[in-house]
Length: 85
Image 1 (cartoon, rainbow, N blue to C red):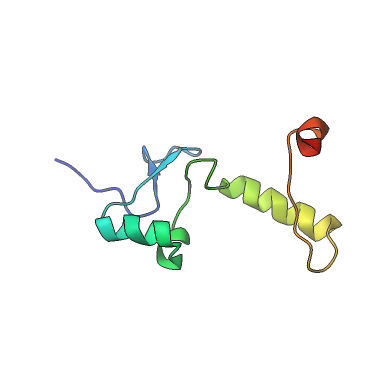
Image 2 (image 1 turned 180 degrees about the vertical axis):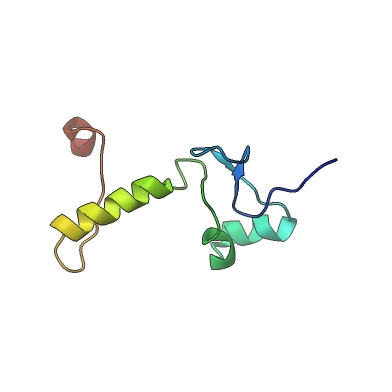
């Protein structure tokens, strides 16, 4: 029997860095494209070009808290060469 994966969960389920995420209804897909908070706030994973993994988001927050000035953002890169590009 088919079991629907809840909105925003990884596909396949319990895959920490899955690149697919469940958008089970047509409205979920439409709202994702529109950037609706009800969808985006429930996403635990996603395709890397469009979604920054939760552990990376946490790392960025740590870097920002430690090094950024007020009203500055932060980005992390795997190497100085990548940052330079």
